[in-house]
Structure formats: C-alpha cells, structure tokens
Length: 120
Image (cartoon, rainbow, N blue to C red; front, side, top):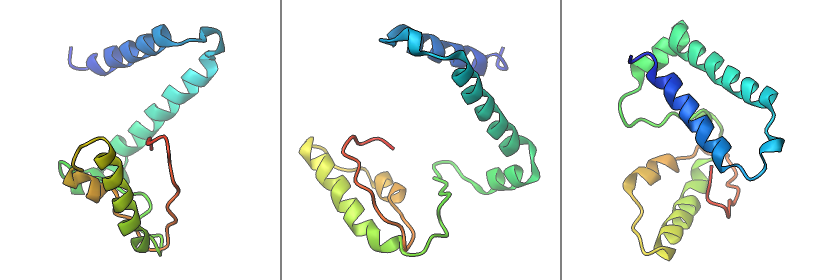
C-alpha cells in the first residue's frame, strides 16, 4: 500500500486542481503528461544515479539545497533580501522565522529581483 501513496497523492492533487480550474478547456493533456514525465525523470536521476545517491547521502533533515552556490557576487545582496523579507513579515504583524535567513543565503554576484507576488 505504501507504494501506491505517491500515485494516490498525485491523482488527488490533479483532481483538486482540475476541480478548482476556472477554464478546464485550456488544460492540455500533453502539457500535463510532459510535466509529470519530467518530474519522474528527475526523480529517477536523483534516486537511481551515483551522483544523486551521493547528494542524498550528504543532505540532512532541514537542509536546503542551492543550485546556484557557485555564482560570485550574491553575498552582497543578502542584507537587502533579508531586510525585504523582514519588512514583508512585519506588514502582516509577524516575525520572520530564522529558517528564512537560510533560504535567503545568496552567493556573491547574484542580482536580487523583486517579486511583488511573494512566490518563488
């Protein structure tokens, strides 16, 4: 039964998305199949290759993996990003959790792009 859980979850998410869609005619099966296929391919690469196994072996619970850790110039942007995050939380009367500082760790040379929608 445990092997079916991911498939059941995937089907459930798909059904929820379909049921909440305001324009179901715009949903293209080809796009959905490609998206799920790419997710499956990336999962197989991570779980079944030596590189993926080495990466998973070094990651601990709570780790955040950065794919852009080797770009120069990012560190200079971190204070501004953190200030922006703290201000956003303050607007909602909340304190920013320390984990957000880890997520905002950027490497020297990166350019911060403003995102008024607040999503990644």
